[in-house]
Length: 184
Image (tube, rainbow, N blue to C red; front, side, top):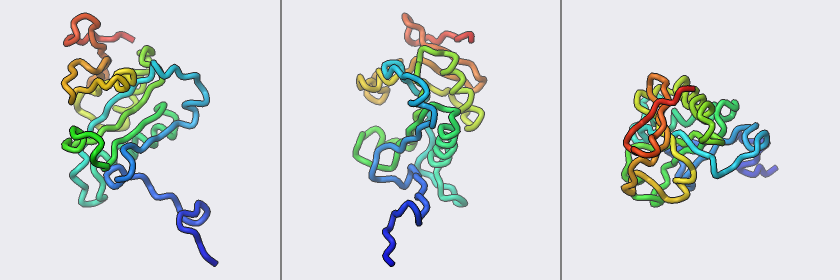
């Protein structure tokens, strides 16, 4: 009897570990309810950006901070706590800024950036699950599609920030360097 390697019935699936994946630029996670339960206006999709060390490995687990946080975020998506997520991998050559960075990025999506209550809820849930002492920053997919990135010299890219104290701020529409507290 010949067993085909990769057979779904015999071998368990290998876990996707960002620091080991070198064939794809991103690993994705989708919620079971995400796309089926709500009609999404893709012009309103946005994401919280999480940055964690992708180089130093734990002597115990062999995982980087980036790997470890991705496992948590992926589980949150699978449990329908977050709408969707993607995680940068070890693939090189996509972007020079990414290749030089010591940190990987995890994007935690919300379906509507104008829904400030849901945007804040997602950030609150991320903070409950992942220790993060810095501000979380939120960017629209419209800006990503338009090629607007901080590493390209664009300032004031993000429209929201979430503090370690759990407060949500939005960028002032006139004075782009100013943040205004969102009262929800």
